[in-house]
Length: 308
Figure (tube, helix red, strand yellow):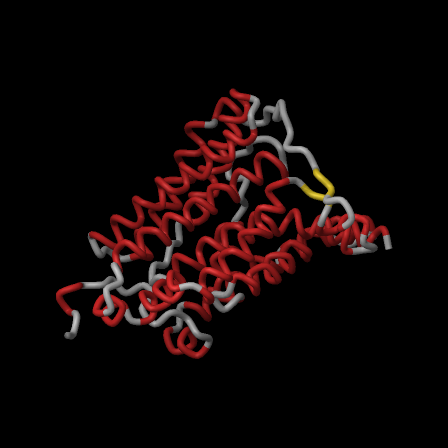
């Protein structure tokens, strides 16, 4: 039983950065904007969060700084893809390359340095004592609990509020949403910015909690896994939580297999293989429609084309 509790705990920790990044990308894509720059935003969030925390000894400032950097980078993508109506795929890939190079440049002096202050683990009284699931889900740091709250809030907003209805309308039929008085451009900007902020926090989690140090390219493809998880979750926050922890469990299981003499690299390949398969499915427009992708995803909106 102790082994099961530990596996759940590690799966949650490994899945938290994936979950945060996926939630943000769900909102961006629900509004019709594909952002392939998640990897770059996570890297910049990890670098910025570590540097600010290292200098100030205040993890909260580090997390906030990471979120701000993620938002700023996402707004670059929003301007290029929404205002200038450039190709969203090209813009997102450029953002990833910028994040990869810029994070290595600005944080090169911090490579390998240990974090002087840690975000504490805070067990939730009562809940953390529940057998099996208690230690696995309710004995973590505040950022894990923040991710729980994000799932609940973002699901509620998306499906139970007028704001969520507007977001879904913009992603499905922006001309109709515009005719109903919804500011298509503002909605898309806000959703892309939210995605950038959560991606930045996801990166900060990696460098402040999961592996408290800065290493170049420490996201190791997690941004791409998050993009695939959006499709896997069918653009739904609750399903994203399940998918993130499944992928986190695959990563956690590597250590168990290694102790049993099994090459952990074999299992380590599975998340990336699954990512490639899901992304291949996602690029097929006919398949996207069948699995419920937003109809206006990747399509720039020209207001003069609105039908009255």
